[in-house]
Structures are given as structure tokens and as C-alpha cells.
Amino acid sequence: MPFIRVTSLSDPGVEIFSSLTEAQLCDKRLFEKGLFIAESPKVINVALDAGYRPYALLTEEKHLEGIAAQVLERVGDIPVYFGDRELLKELTGFPLTRIVLCAMYRPALLSVEEVLAGAHRAVVIDSVTNTTNIGAIFRSAAALGVDAVLLTRTTCDPLNRRAVRVSMGTVFQVPWTWLDSPISSLHRYGFKTAAMALTNQSISLDNPVLKDAEKLAIIMGTEGDGLSREAISEADFVVRIPMKNNVDSLNVAAAAAVAFWELRDNSHPFPKTQRL
Image 1: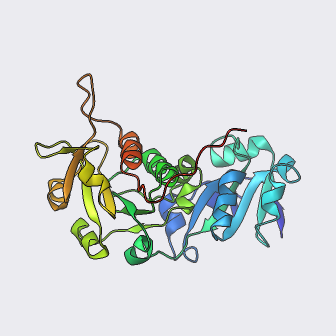
Image 2: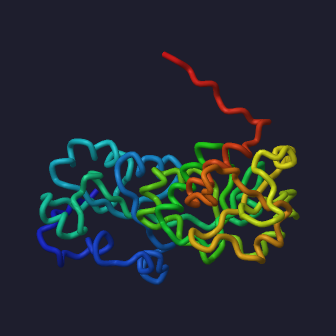
């Protein structure tokens, strides 16, 4: 494992943590399979547990034998860049409060069929471009029993650095892929579809017909405009969350969490909370 001290912002190799854009990191002409950045030992360990391969690592020198040591034991023979706090802050644009950054190879993309295999609850994220919301939706999906995530091509990349960070690594735990076919195509996998939208035809989130669906895909729309008419018209159900005080909508990540919990698959119960 080569340890490389960073002494200058122009040192070769460190550009993957600083000057390269998300699009450049994804570019397979620059890096085999493309890269993404994971931050903090916790998130990196979740990625490693899921089989993601590391490419290079960056940390402060003082952490090489401290909090980053356990990660270093797992990443194998990759370049490890290190330096003092002020230089790395200038390099990355922010203090390394998360201790360590790891550039990792992007995984082979799964097919829709592979992602939905064995799934009973899925979410379709349609045209959501805010990376914080993407990360939060993944975290709620992992916590609240959603088995699969499908994203339209107008949705931002779930391996965006901020999305990964906000998800706390759950983006590595829930199978996901891009959905390039119409939402109605999910019928071929046995799924009913529920579009979260306010229309005259919307049914309440607690309607028993929704919980009776053996396989259900919940469709969440963009933060500002909501779901398109096309997405709504294709859905088997149009669903609203009952609200008080004349509030007509929630942030998409908050709405997703409410919907995931209410529409959870009760045939696979959550573990009981144990008090110590």
C-alpha cells in the first residue's frame, strides 16, 4: 500500500478528491467503470461490506494510526494520500471533519428485473434533482422496508458525493437502477403502482386497497412541480397524505418516509424493539 504525502495542490493523483467534477469521476474514459467519493469510515465500511472496490484514499496524517486505521486494513493495495489539515482543507474546499475520503469504483449497473427480484415494496424516484433529498429517500427506504429503488434518468445520480453522505451509506444497501421504460412496465413484474400526488382522484394513504397489494411501487415526484401528468395517468392509484392546517404537501423526502411506513409490507414484520 503506497502512502503518499500531499505537499502541494498540484500533486498528481489528488485531483480526484478536489478538482474533478462528478461528471468527470463518472467518465469511464478516465477511470475504469467510473468513480464516486464516499466520506467517513462508517460510510466507507458500509460500501466495503456491500462489495464496492476502493480506488484511492485521502486523510489527515494524524488519523493514519487513529480513526482511519480500521479502514486502511480493509482497502488493500491502493494509494493513500495524506497531509496536514490546512492543506487538505484547501485541497478539498472543506475541513475533513469526516476524517477520510475514499474514491471507489462504480458497480456494474443492475437490470430492473434483478433489482425487483424478491421485492414487495419499491420506490420510483421521478425527476428528483436535489441530492440531499435523494440521500434521505434512500435512508428512509433502507430503514422502513423498501426493497428496491428505481430512478428515472431525469433524477440525479444516487452516487453523488452529497447523496451518498446524506444516505449514511444506505445507497449501498438497497438495490437500485435506472428505469428507462414507462412506469406501467412494472406491471410485468407483478407490481401495482401508487403515484403520490394531489388530484381529484387521489385516495388517502391509509386506504386498505393499498396495503392489500402484494407488490407495490410508490412513485415520488420532483420537489417543485410534483409528478408529471403522464406518470399520474399511468399509475394504478393516485395517493395523497392526509394533512391539517391547510398544508397541501411535504418535502419529497419527508413524504417518502411517511408513505414507506404507512405502506410497508406487513408480511415481513419489523423486528421488535428490545430494551436493555
